[in-house]
Length: 223
Length: 253
Image (cartoon, rainbow over all chains, first blue to last red):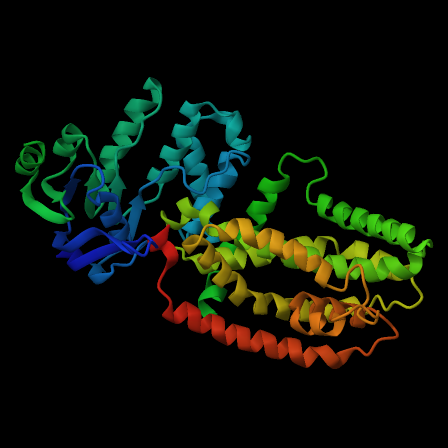
């Protein structure tokens, strides 16, 4: 049973110059992700991994082709977007949950869960600019991993915070990966991808250059 | 438009959030917008008094208060629309929310700021015999209609600024120039050359005159309503068409 289907997707980025109005980011991409699959996206910088994730999430629309989603898609692309350092983690979490479309009645419970997981005490109610970078990372991590995810899209791993938090965070990540019905993970960390994913898709020159097992995909990418 | 109504929870929240960020470190917070209006009125009354050699606060202040109240709303919206999509780039590229939500946020935020400074306008209207403070109540739906009408031009402006970033440097000073072409420091009944043409071509002038008409006992009140409602309806239809047929600006961010 499919979770995602990509059919002949191309994506051109508008550049606005007369000489080259568009730049090709992705060209004629097709693949499907089944439920239960853990797919790694590999490729050098600028090959369109993040753009493909945004197309899968419905954030961007393809120039041609179609993306079909069979379930609720959650994306973890930028841990700290829409977060202001003037506001407290509490207020920033509320904003992100509203942007996610979470009903108002559920927000207090989810925020409590985030607060408990982040373990930053009273700082949760103070402006973000009074937090250490480790605390920032804890809040961003707790925020992104507290919600249940059906089809999960991740761009690069999480910069895990201090040592005391790392073990707890790793356990939660593994739980998150296993709980998701489908996972698409873009990263340069082949060790992490090998331990997390079963299948690998390599992007090269804007097209899918390889689609197969994770071991062979990593070998292809590193060759 | 239905899409905008459905996303009202998001743009209302983002508008309040912006105000919290803007005034987060300030002791008096959004009350700054009240004091800004009050200080501008006092400053302009004094400046006019110096120029004509006579200070008549009771006559000049209500007219100036209403005009500046509208002017601050209009100019803040136009200026912010040139930067909003760039400022919200990360949010736009990390969520399924489209740019129309941020346009609505800008209008909502400045409507809220405008509502905060309403007591100053009311207070100054009460100081004049020729004022009708209750006209302010009638003015609320008119300002709302004008805000809806503004969705189209500011949406176009915000999108154009992404395509031609130079507009960020051109639009704000041009808008400020419009101040001098609006009946704020001069009256349209004065014998200034082209004053009637300027008022007819300048939507802010139009709204300022409407606002002044509604809050004055002497002016004819309802002559502007039909124009503004028609303007709002046409603009709303055009904006709906723009949302339906235009592609997302996200591919340019």
